[in-house]
Amino acid sequence: QAQLQEAGPGLVKPSETLSLTCNVSGASITSGDYYWSWIRQRPGKGLEWIGYIYHSWSTYYNPSLRTRVTLSIDTSKNQFSLKLSSVTAADTAVYYCARVWFAELAFDTWGQGTLVTVSS
Amino acid sequence: QSALTQPPSASGSPGQSVTISCTGTSSDVGDYTHVSWYQQHPGNAPKLIIFEVNKRPSGVPDRFSASKSGNTASLTVSGLQTEDEADYYCCSYAVRKIVFGTGTKVTVL
Image 1: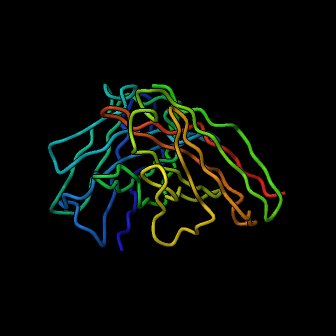
Image 2 (image 1 turned 45 degrees about the vertical axis):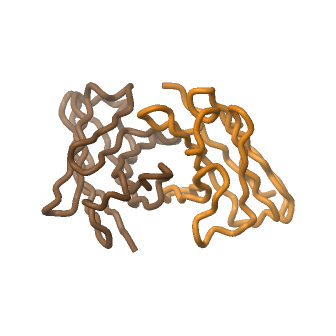
Image 3 (image 1 turned 90 degrees about the horizontal axis):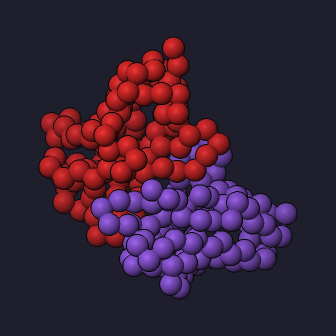
């Protein structure tokens, strides 16, 4: 059974880059059956898709975040990462990583989420 | 990018049914079968309860059912139980992107 766990700083300064990693266990990140995705949830708000990555060469981003987001995969560590640049207070949120079924495009396994606060 | 539209709240007594709508456009819900639903209890990560419009993952009770007509998807929770009190989000594919619904808080009276 796959398990995902987010890791990274809980506090980021405005204008800096938010960096998070999702460690995957119980499944191979090189499997062709899945995308690997990031979703965020601002305090008291709904879910917002950030993007997903397939293998290491196909990435899809939320158009509203595309200019600031980079997703990558490290197959040697079986993990994938999120970088969000030029953050502001509006980027304060719980960030989730999730596995996405390739054919059905459904988020079947989620990490527990990690709160990232943007503040000086 | 516009979120899919859901009612902010819905409620029902134990044993009753509640139906949540999810309205999109012909560019997302109306054009694809990749519609899914998620249940989120406070402080927890979302959980997949419906995929491909009306399919349930293993382990999800058959009290949860869903459908789609045109640009609107719907989730029905039958035989409401106290543990069904949660936020529910719909989700759809929309050409090279994913869109979530605005979310519906279901209260069991």
